[in-house]
Length: 425
Image 1 (spheres, rainbow, N blue to C red):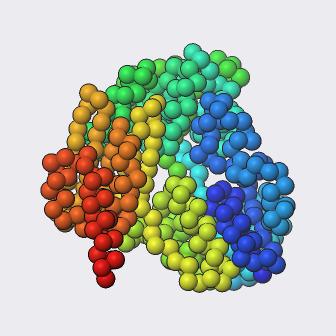
Image 2 (tube, one colour; image 1 turned 45 degrees about the vertical axis):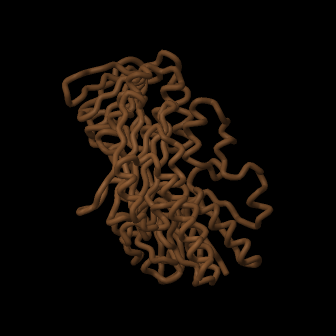
Image 3 (cartoon, rainbow, N blue to C red; image 1 turned 135 degrees about the vertical axis):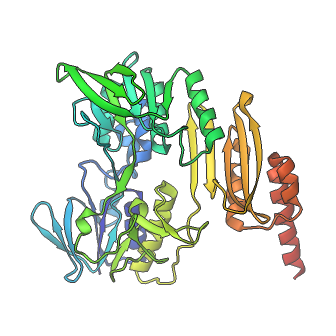
């Protein structure tokens, strides 16, 4: 059996290793399009603040890990998939045949249509090469502008602020992390950052970037939609990503937001599977299909896809809960499931802005379906557990509406009751 995996991020690496455990004789090829060994993008902020070296970002620390596992690593970009012929066409001009194919190509940054975005001194923080460029410029006292304060932007924000740079953040939404936090929570994060010395602009955007000075040391003059201008030594763009699917044109693989997959991580084309940020898989909360671009989802996708590729067709994906946990300059925030609530639902809320504490619970009937927390880390595991278990809270729902911080007691009371009833049966 010839297995080929396109993409050497967490989904691809875990899939390759799982395949090797299940099929000791199959040929496994893992393709990446960067010169570095497989690494984690989520580790780049730690690299920027010199908490780890480049090697610290690598997914597997041993240089001969893949050789010992019998996994062939290749540095190639796939430009076309011939699904009928089970063949890949590579940028180098060569081809590669497969019996089973996994697409784990992840996403790429989206560059906003702003005049000047192609100037020197403007980077995304998406690859190790980006990391090197940013690390060489984000120094104490340097003037840095961060475009975008979503989840990825706020992870980068942490690293840029700790570098000692004079940091300004511009977010077009009316609050920080608008796809993860409601208005109260997002604006608490904004105020926290301002108190830590970061200049934050929301409800505005960059409209133009111009350059002066030398190519090696450019000064970037940035104009905002609100009319303000500022001079920067570095601009970092974190304005969103898009799944890497262009090479699938004409392949027959069905694509919407990402590559549509069933519960076996199988695409619309036999013998082709998808996993990770590129896959549009089952959403636990809605029952629909969505792209969930977080590393735990990618890891689970990779393992399930590999098991089905190896013939274990009973390996089914039960759907992932929307889950984000973020540390912004020491303020930990999280959101789970349908954190924005549903029509006809109910909610409970604790809001203590002076202490940067916030807790919001969203219910459908007496079932917890979503939650947001800020500055209250002790509840994180319980919130996910209640949402995932779909336990009926009964009378505890009214208790939580008066005091949502007793969520642990509600969890224990209901899980112990379930355990007691099960033992009686």
